[in-house]
Image 1 (cartoon, helix red, strand yellow):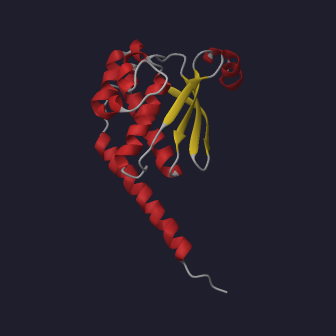
Image 2 (cartoon, rainbow, N blue to C red):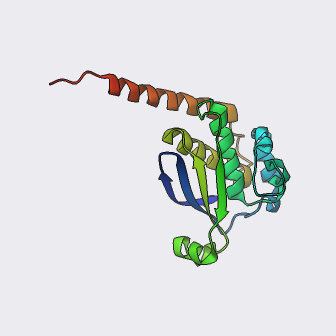
Image 3 (cartoon, rainbow, N blue to C red):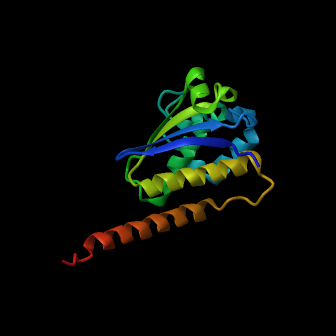
Amino acid sequence: MAGLFDIHSITVGPEKCTVVLGVAPSAPLMTSDDLEGTASVYYLAPGIVDQACLGDAGKTFKACMGSTELPHLLEHLTIEIMSKTGLAGKVVCGRTRALSDERAAEVMGPDYAGRVFETDLSCPDDVLTVGALSSAVFIMEWAFLHRDQPTPDFEGTVEALAQLVGRLSGSARKQSQAPVEE
């Protein structure tokens, strides 16, 4: 079964995670192409509309949510999931931009002209950021491709991610505190 996004790469750095992805040629590109799917995302995560959104129609994501690229919605949904865990710190941000048609063709092939994007996300913790991204992709695939399936449990997803990050952070702490035998 075809997905909504084709992820080309994820690069995790000390402060940001960069994702290069294509919107599947058979999928809607803009939120305005499927307002029901867009509304489904909003109903699960209504806080996305209050997020700051620089460089678009207004000061918050609400101003452009009805007519923006799906990767931009993915960025804001990922940020919302990270923020809701309470583990991301005070400032969680992102930036999404389209790659040129030439670069898109190099990266994903000619069918992806105008459909390849690069998104930078805050990365306070690699598991948190990549986990939130993965969860956001799942939610958006449900909203835009599989609304006939059971609605994802947004709060449960956030809680499970927070627990995972907490367990892994605890494991890392325990390993760093283990006595060294000589």
